[in-house]
Image (cartoon, rainbow, N blue to C red):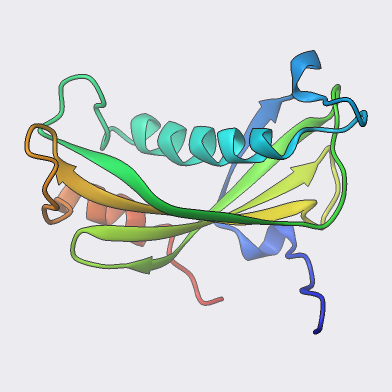
Length: 146
């Protein structure tokens, strides 16, 4: 089986810097694998909130995670500064698949790459609902040829 090659910063559309914390390190002295998923969540939802298309407290719809995964290419640890690169790999009627690269300090190659699938649902019924025009425009801006 061929080992996947880590992506580079050029593969992503937008970036968010996230500072690591002392508690992110585990007994092995590197960032614990569960922290990667927290960083994915922070990058995706932070972008949606900053763009004004996600109101997780009052919005009629919210995005729920239905699938996620991660490939690890190298270690990261406190006090590294992580840059999360974000792109949209596919955009459906009510779902979106994000791809996120985590870059250590100023490195060009990702130390980890993951995916994150959101389904847009009605806040109360939790039934899938079409992604609205405003959110769709924001998500389409993150779509690129991969």
